[in-house]
Image 1 (cartoon, rainbow, N blue to C red):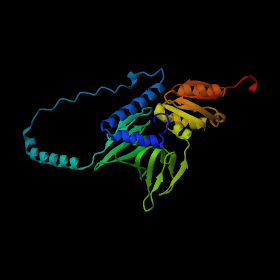
Image 2: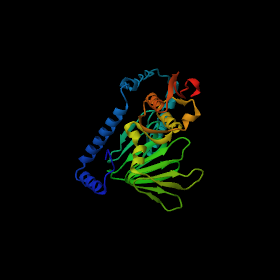
Image 3: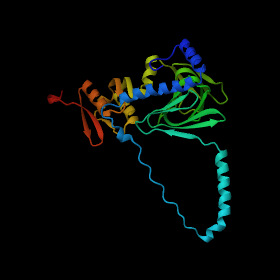
Image 4: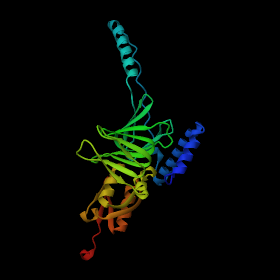
Length: 314
């Protein structure tokens, strides 16, 4: 499963193995987390310092104020009654669990029944439990939902649309200035349409929400190579296959606060191919410069790629 989608027979064999002993689901989730973490660690590069990513120490709570005043006593009964009402409201309202990642961060969260979610860079989701049914609302970013071994389907909301994955592994994207997207790696995902028939998506299929319309998805088939490139971020990589340098730079902007500036318009349109670490914008820029005979320089907090000018105007 780490290197390629399972065949139909292998998927059935995995399902049978998981259902034979409930402890196997936990072992399976731990194994997947280990291989995904190991792939991500390789992409961090030799300059990675874990101390830079330690959470800040929490400030100690302020000392409790113990002074009591007689005039406040008459409000204590009303305050206590208000607190009881507030607690009752909180316990009856559904409180979602929020998960988020910062720019350049990736996070995997097990959901407890054989499913996991992996948040890509700068992603924010909310997880709801609707009477035992899992519902995920994608507010921003990109999330990989792996439910091939899950015991229940996963309902997802994005841009006001609903979709449901049953024993499926799929990606949901909500990026700035782009329509929402769904990419199915394995299993089956159903796109729900109001007042219309549902639209099923099979493995190796993508769907983009049509811009400027209340209804409708645009479908496209995905080859194994395309899907692998789309999911390269799981390993901390950016996979390019003919995208322009300008498009590649826009991808890097999702992962890094260090902007890459293309100084010459001619360089912006050249096609780029290769596999690059998401956390190494300078290494990417130098590799591109070597291929296209350009110069790279750092100006303050930004990286500039410029065409190399030779004597004689060549």
